Amino acid sequence: MDPKDLMRGGSTSGPQFVVQDAFGTVRSTLNAEGAVIDPSGRVLAYIEGDGTVGSVDLQYIGEVTAAAAPTSIGFITDEDDKLIGKVDYGRAVIQDPQGSTIAELRKSGHVTGHLGASCGVLEGFDYHMLRSAAAYLMLVDRTFVQDK
Image 1 (cartoon, rainbow, N blue to C red):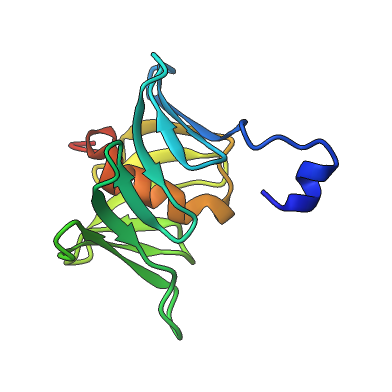
Image 2 (cartoon, one colour; image 1 turned 45 degrees about the vertical axis):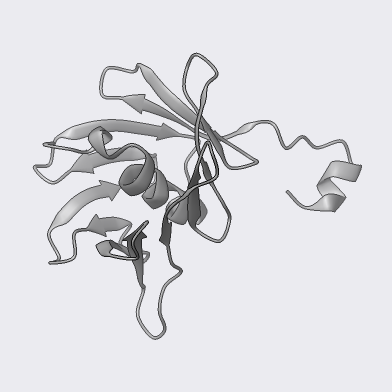
């Protein structure tokens, strides 16, 4: 959050988005500090603004890069720097390294999987959060979009 917002009384503790499955059950929350927290309050991971993801014990999990000019494609790598996916920032689509769709995000935050089935919703999502959303879906909670 911008320091000027803090001076005006803004809070950094509110959620960026709340992850709900297809039945409306809350799976986790990504707060403004980048902590991914499950419904019981346990921290699962940290997603930094630069796209890096770390575990609770601060081990590197992976990274989502910004779009590589002149395209709208960013890359998702795991802890071994192995390419595990791509994110198309222009279409809000997450793909595997071969180009098959893993997930598609809508402006409303609704997430559909590879087979077109609803995975759930990222409540509070907007397209400026796509990098964090891709990090969550690919590096923190891969089962959210698996087989859907």
